[in-house]
Image (cartoon, rainbow, N blue to C red):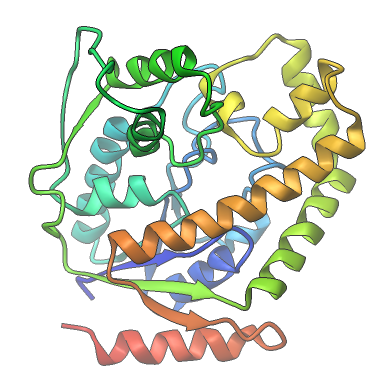
Amino acid sequence: MKQIIVIVGPTGVGKTKLSIALAKHFNGEIINADSVQIYKELNIGTAKIKTQEKENIPHHLIDIKKVEDNYSVFDYQSDARKIIDAVLKRGKTPIIVGGTGLYIKALLYDYRFMKEEKRADYNHLSNQELIELIKKYDFNTDVDQNNRRRLIRVLNKYANNEDIMDQGGDVLLYDAVFIGLTTERKILYERINNRVDKMIEAGLVEEAKGLYNRGVNSKAIMTAIGYKELYKYFDKKITLKESIDLIKKNSRHYAKRQYTWFNNKMDINWFEVDINNFNNTTNQVIGYINQNIV
């Protein structure tokens, strides 16, 4: 099978579980497309797959960077394309799975980048327009929309690292089938809330506190849901309960934004998840892919 399988959808919907099943069925290797799972030490808050859960399926682009490092969309595009080529040469199926839409878009489409060395003039843009530009780099941005100086500073920080060029951005470079997992909003939100509670039980507070005590304030920490909220608690700005509630709220909002992004940016084949029997969902997806193999 020379096609690439892409699994997308909101947080907490079952992408990882489906990716393992498809990798077994189609002799695949999994390529992570979650911008936070790139980093070491961010384990519990990212619901990072454990070694035993991989079931001996090769996984790529997980735990490849220190949490203090910067890793750009351009870096991901370059690394992941090399991996796709290598997997295909081995006669196996690349399976891209994750919820970071910009990573997937930059990887599979004719998305081009150029280095930007100077600070741009954004005075002609409204605050909302600045927010939209920032979201091209970090869709999960949490910058105060009313703090214009901060908006411009953040935008320049991203732009100085990589400037997205929209030319050719809608041209798909690979033979790929796009699978999206979805479920009722109420069910999804309940799953997200429960997952956050399990993360807390598993030691998320302690994981984040260890990074906080080391003075880690990198981009990865400051944009990752589950860590930035706990940092506010450690700074004594909010209570622990408020921090946990904020993690749930931000996770729900992020899931909603993910739906919007994927629907607007990609041609996704959506599948309703059978919560009570996930095998039904897996079999449905496998049947669809078999019918669409070129």
